[in-house]
Amino acid sequence: MKNATRVAVIAGLCVVLSGAVHAQSRPAEGAQQFAEYGDFKLQSGAVIHGFRLGYRTLGKLNASRSNAVIWPTWLGARSETLLPYMGPGNVVDSTKYFVILVDSIGNGVSSSPSNSETQPRMQFPEYTIRDMVEAEHRLATETLHLSHVRAVMGISMGGMQTFEWIVAYPYFMDVAVPMEGSPQSTSYDKLLWTAQIEALELDPEWQGGNGTRPMTRGLAIYSEIGSMNITSPAYRVAHTPPNQFRAFLEETKKADATNAASASDAIRQRQAINALDIPAEYGVTLEQAARRTRARVLVMVSSADHIVNPTPALVFAKAIGAPVVTLDSPCGHLSFSCISLGPTVAQFLADPASVQSTTLREANK
Image 1 (tube, rainbow, N blue to C red):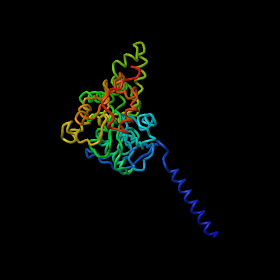
Image 2 (cartoon, rainbow, N blue to C red):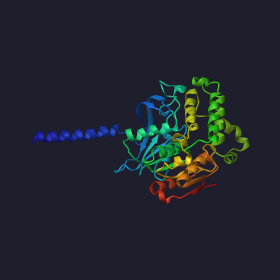
Image 3 (tube, one colour):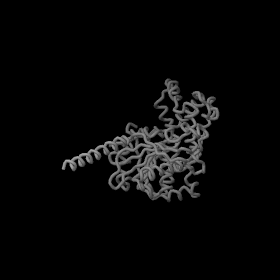
Image 4 (tube, one colour):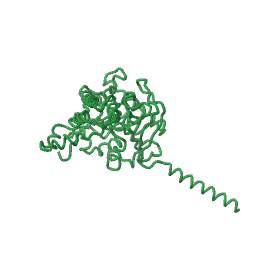
């Protein structure tokens, strides 16, 4: 009897200890994680060696594994940047959904020119928005073992990835919400990104991507171009009186790309955006590419967007009869931070058929 009791106690202790170890090994809510995929072959045939993809998860999968939401980062952003958009009353309620925030290729967290040991800086191969999506698909299916998700969504370059997702994997999600993204870069978009790339390459400390000292003049022009386009002329006039311009300009020059290594990240991501052309991937028109879609789609555009021209997104929406939410704000491409998107996105995630085309305006406009 004593032996039986001892065995039962030991067995119970083992279960408790096993559970404790498992709990300790489980990443904390929203913690940075990485998936390792070795050699990652790109659409071009080039290979990223030692490829790894950064991500964070919030919330829990429900019993039917039907509440996952994939949200990749925008240009230059890291997954931690998306954390403020999570939670009750926010854009995605992580108490209801299992949210997967993904560090897009080249953002300095996932494999990038700035952190690659074997392919540093401009030796890092050019990749595309579609390559970003292929990496995210592997994360969802191979690492997280998901065969279907509730939604894919994203802002700006994240919205571009969302368009790629719904065309490349039309049956993988129930709904999709591309916000201020595009299925095809226009000539205006390419002019912006090309100007920024060339500004960086003209910096004396660029040195073909091999410079080691802080960049200055070219970096300043790169930042000025970005600042001139991120909002609207009306926004800048209203928020920067002429006598405050010098202080504004000095603050603008404090860019995130401070040397040739981080500038390499900025250039490669912009090259990916320049190459964005979903119809060309399939040899069809934009309307025909849109009709590959099987998910319910909510397209969000900004009427004063000088970063991502909304025309291709509107053509895409019209081709499939998707509702369009127009963000009407002088904030331009930053309208998503000036207008509350949470209620509309939450309604669409819960009941897509209930959301119709509408215009959302800034509350204090």
